[in-house]
Length: 78
Image (cartoon, rainbow, N blue to C red; front, top):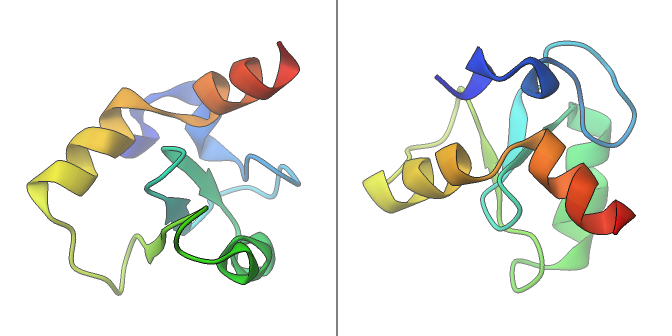
């Protein structure tokens, strides 16, 4: 479901294909390298989860479905 949006098929930051990490805070997806940058911001700014290795609560899944890479990009571009 998270990959059903075309903008979610690449890292929101560097455009690497098939991102495997997410910021629940922003509802965006990113690659392993960029996930380290987001983790470095602190969980109070960007709460990072692995798509494959972490458990996800229903609220976290809802946050991701409400977000998406395009929504984040549009927000920061405005």
